[in-house]
Amino acid sequence: MRRLTSVACLLALAALALLSGCGEPQFSDAEKKTIASLALNTLPSLKPDTTNQYADVPAAAALGSTLFFDAGMSRHGTVSCSTCHKIDRQFQDDLPQAVGVGHTNRRTMPLAGVARNPWYFWDGRRDSLWAQALTPLENPLEQAGNRAAFAHYIKKRFGERYERIFGPLPDLSSVPANASPLGSDAEKAVWNAMPASQQDDVNRVYANIGKAIAAFERSIEPGQTRFDRFAIDLATGAKPEGDAAFSPEEVLGLKLFIGKANCVTCHNGARFTDNAFHNTGVPPVDGLPPDRGRVDAVALVEADPFNCLGKFRDGDESACRELRFMVKDGPQIMRAYKTPSLRGAADRPPYMHAGQFSTLDEVVAHYSKAPPSVEGVSEVHPLDLSDRERAALVAFLKTLSD
Amino acid sequence: MASIWRYILAGLGLAALLVGIVAVVYLTLPHSASGPDLSRSKKTANGLFVASFEPERGVIRQGELQSWLLTLKTAAGAPVEGAAITVSGGMPQHNHGLPTSPQATDYLGEGRYRIDGVKFTMSGWWQLHFGISAAAGSDSVVFNIVL
Image 1 (cartoon, chains in turn purple, brown):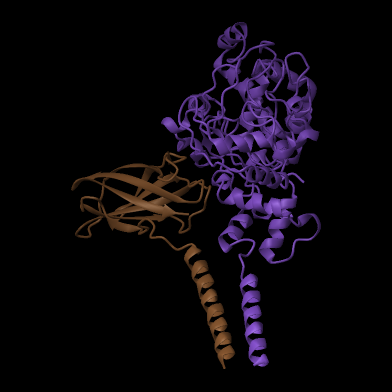
Image 2 (cartoon, helix red, strand yellow; image 1 turned 90 degrees about the horizontal axis):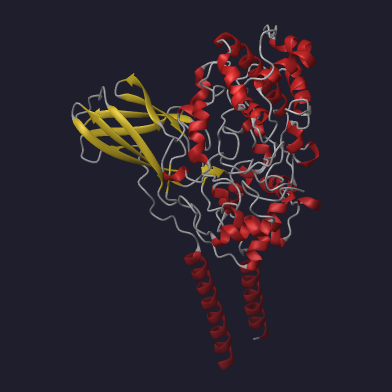
C-alpha cells in the first residue's frame, strides 16, 4: 500500500518536473533567427563605391579627413563638417536641429556605417555619400560657402595634396572668387556669366572635394555592443556571461522589439534600418518651415548635377539603380523620413528628424499611441503597450549603446 | 481495499490533469495558418497567359535591389513576345506600396522579361501586380512573396 502511494507520488513529481522543464524556452527558433539577423557579425563587408574611384584611396581619405575638420571650408572660416558631426559624440551634435552658420530645420544624423546608405539626409535628397558631403558646404544655414571659393581654397591650401590624388588642378586664374548656381543672387549671376567649360572645371574640383570627404567617412563604422555579444552567444548556444547576459527586462524588451511592438519591421538588419522612408506620424515642430519629407526630396535628388546619373560619377550607370527605380510619387512618401539606425541611439537624444522627442520614453510612447499624421498617412498602428512593456523596450534599446 | 481504489482514482485524476495541460499547450501553439498562394507560376486573371516569376539569381535577399524574371506564355505554351508590362505592389498587411518602382527593363527572348529594381525592405507578405498587354489581349496577375 505504502509502496503504491510512493510510486504514485514519484510519478506525479516526475510529471511536474517534466512539465516545468518543458516550459516556454526563452526564445523560439523564429525569434532566434530574427535576433541573429540583427547582430553586427552579419553586417556584410563594405561594398566598393564604383561612383567614386577614390573611395578606397588612402590619400583621398586622409585629405577628406583634413577637410572634414577644417573650419576653413566655410564662408567665414567658422564651421566645418565636424561642427555638427562631432567626433566624440557619434558624429552628431545632441541638438534638436543642427546649427551651422544659421539654425537648420533638421536633426544632425550620426555617421556610423554611413557609407552603407542608399540615400542621404532624412529625406534622401542625395543619392551618394560624396554628393551628400557637398550639400552642407553651400547651404547658407550650414557652411554657407560657394563652389568657386572652395576651388580657390583647395588650390591655395591643399593644391599639392589634391593633385597627387586627382591629377592637375584646372586653371583657376580667371575663375571669380565667389560663384555658385546655389548661392546668393550675386553669386548666381556671376556663375551664370562663367563659360560652361569653367563651370565644369569648378564642378569637377567640387565633386572631388566630396569624393575625398566620402573616402574618409567610409571608415566610420558601428562598433560591437552588449546586444551583439548576447546575440552571438544565443546563436552559438553559449550561456551569455558578464555584460552579455540580459536582465529579464531586457529580454522582454527584445521580445517586444521583434514581436508585438513591430519595431523590427523597419528597424531590421545589422544596422537596425531598412534604409527606406516611412510616415510614422511624427509631429511637425512649431516655428520651423513646412517639411514634407521624402515627397519634396524626389525632385531635389533628380535635379542634383552630382547625382549618380550626372557626369561627375565614376564607373558606369549600373551603379544608379536606386535612383533609377526610386518611388517618385504616391501618398506613401508624404511626410516620409528615413528609418534611422538604432545603434548608439540611447546615447544621443533628442530623437526624430527635427529632434521632436527628448527621451527614448517619449519615442516609445509615440509608437505605442501612434497618432495620425498631420499630412499623409502614418504607417504605424496603436500598440497600447503597458508601462512595463514601454520601459522594457527602452531597456533593450540601451543594450545597443553599451 | 477501498483505499487502493482511492489511490487509483488519484492516479487517474493526475493523468487527466496532465492530459488537460498537454491539450492546452497544444492548442495555444502557433499553427501554420493557410497563407496566401505562393506559387511562382500561374494563369493570369482571365486565363490569357501563364506567368512565372522568379528571382534572376535564384535567391531573395532582403534589403537588396534585385532583378526578377517574368516569363509569359500563352495558354497553348507559346512564348509571349512584345508585351507591355506595368508593375505595382506592396504589403497588404501594412497598407503600403513598394519601396521602389520596379520596371520591365529588358526582353530576354522566349517570353522572358527582366523586372529590375525589385526590393523587399522587410520580412512579411508582399504582393507584386503585373498588368500585361500583348497581341492576345490584356490581362493581369498577382504574385505573393513571403519573406
